[in-house]
Length: 149
Image 1 (cartoon, rainbow, N blue to C red):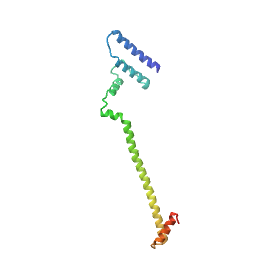
Image 2: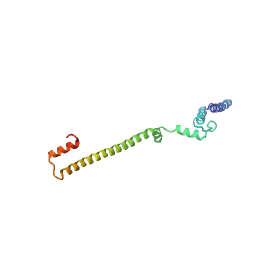
Image 3: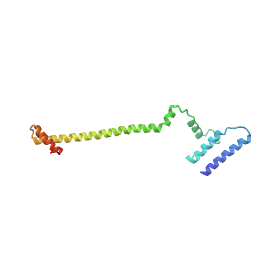
Image 4: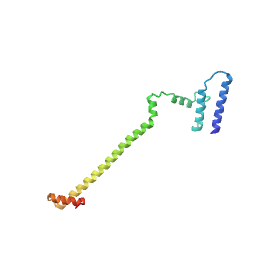
């Protein structure tokens, strides 16, 4: 990594020296941009780029377009907020899924409760042999099934 940085910086220094020999003024900012992109491309991404010598390098042009975008552009705003938007959508979706799961769980509990009650009532009705129960018998039988009698 150090050798990559040294060769890139040596290329930059030789380019600056050539500009200084002519004696005319020049803008060093684009040269620093090319140096920075070359170092990042080689060390971080492993990409061989020649942004210092080629102002029309694809990587250089892409980065210039990326950073020269208007920050009020809706596409730019959405791109910047993409992670937050995804997190919010995930919260809504998973919240809805959790709600459905809770509702299904509650439906199962209600179903089991209803079937248990029906089985108890049918069992009690079969013990009465079809005869109507008076209130005392009903209280006695329900307290037995609830475990209080």
